[in-house]
Length: 487
Image (tube, rainbow, N blue to C red):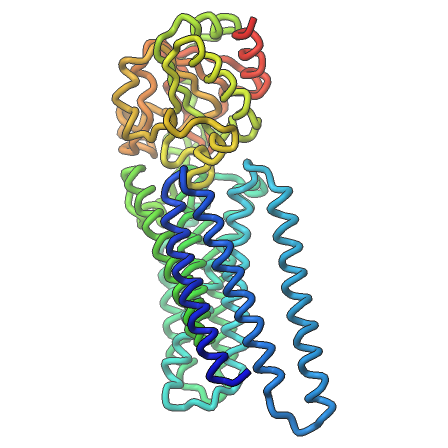
């Protein structure tokens, strides 16, 4: 293959792959077209990998070598290493994707983001150590390397911390160190000073400054995510997705790879837009999410165990009573939360809604933008259970309907139905739009216990006169409820 042909093939293939990625994002914007969007993205990535591998092998085969033995061995070694990377990486990815439960999808996404960050760091260091022979644009090239490693290191360590929080290895409470903002500022200023020193070094003499900055960036990523509470984890996952995109784009600049730049920019910008949309849904700014420490215990409660004291008595109910009330209702709204995902109760919940619809009850699902641990987590769970898209409503669509609803089933949700967001100015979630379920005639909350939600905030909804608690594992409770309804 000639150099001109390879360049043309790579350019056309990268253009096609870039268009497929754009169409993939468009398809992922709605539930109905999400499968097609995933397929288009898969095809685009497959095309990019195959063409990149072919171009790499062709360049190795066509490389001039003084020793004939080396010339013969180089293609074989290159093909072996490439095959091992593709087969090994593909096998690990396929194994993870086939075994991961939907409840574990958030932490899987977080750890995948860390891989992108780690790749950007390694590519940056390798690119710096490899002589380019281009002195005219050396300063620009060094800036690309420095920024790519900085963003990659923050993405890597931040994603690892997010994984540990989502996995439950680290608590969801934010780490509120004294002077944390000054500490963050000092690390950013230190990185800028190191950048100035790094750019002045000839050859590869700036490596020590690069490695010191990498260490600082790793600490910065850890501290930034540790200071974010559990209630903000959906936004954090989305934000880290954006970081990983920009890290990939930076790696594209380092490698002069147009497709990597385009793909990284698409992921980075879409992740940033999604983060802003979710912040708007929480009535907060992105700066407040990153630096606000949402989920910290109120100062008044800090002297004790960090949890608010119970605000009143609760009303308990039984499966039989709930079944009778559901059958006597005309309008029912189901609010799914992460507790439903953990219990893997979505299929039984779907059977309950289908049975009620068959009996003439108007049943719908209400989805809060930050329900679960991942943007769109609840939508995916319901789609997995084959719940019709037509009865799944977003918060803005359905909030006004609660006042005309006979019964609301809140299954494993807590923070997204907390009235403190509207009427308690001292609450950490004050001002956050929530599903106003308390306006319904009757609210049934399915929970394991009276423990606070993931954000660690007590919910006054549980003490209201029209709220009834059905304690127990969500899957067992909804299965028993389904059996009672059928009987």
